[in-house]
Figure (cartoon, rainbow, N blue to C red):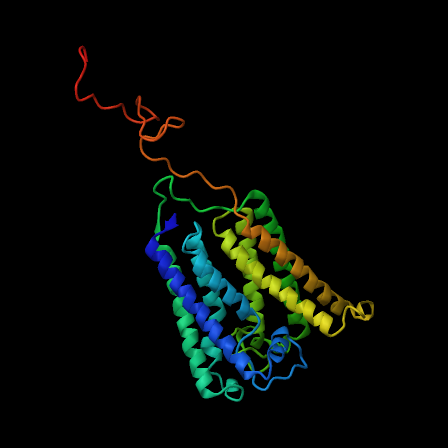
Length: 337
């Protein structure tokens, strides 16, 4: 199944609108900071970072901005446009949903102005509506491949599917393992860790840290299973999961260099050593699976037009059976016809 032209244009417009909303909030944070370096420190998770105003975004909004921009271009021509729209819609809904109950909370009053929170709430509703519209567009705009001039959806190759399965499966296991460790080490943070509250910090437009970790783990598991099954949706879901995983690892590595953890690696507690190693592990897995998910598999054969005989060309029908119906009688039958 592929998308109609109208569905492709509609999906591209929705992705462009989502990209503009994210870009607007990023520009707001850049203008609110004394310099862009301060914003980068907050995005990287430096606990000693200074900021004149609290940021409304996180570093993961950069990934979403790239995802929306790429999707707006790709869906116009790609054979996997339908699954790409579904993947973008699902991720958008999952990321923006916690804002419905967090943006209006009293704890946000002291951090952000009423005008800023009102705009954030409107954008959250708009993003959710756009995410739902993307999924509806992908479902309503599908149609079968008609002839050999159209490209059917391309599945990932066997090798790429195995790499996606192993890479994202390992990443999901590591993410779940650290979430279990977090629950043991700080049980007083729950349920705020997942749903938001006074005991955790979250950006105005972003989800709580535990919510995002759970989303990343679920995306990795779904993309990993889809990859080994060579499903059509494995590539868009795998690309988004790998991009988020890669950024998560990059931020961890940046923090390790900033706080000079590598220089004193052997002197660190075992848990701190595992945190440092996890960052590099996520960078490796994210880059590997991003490359594997980006590689298309073999192009499936398109349906042949009616009356097509392999090796003889379209419209050839010398005899009945798989080569088509018998030819009609000539307009001037010869003697003895």
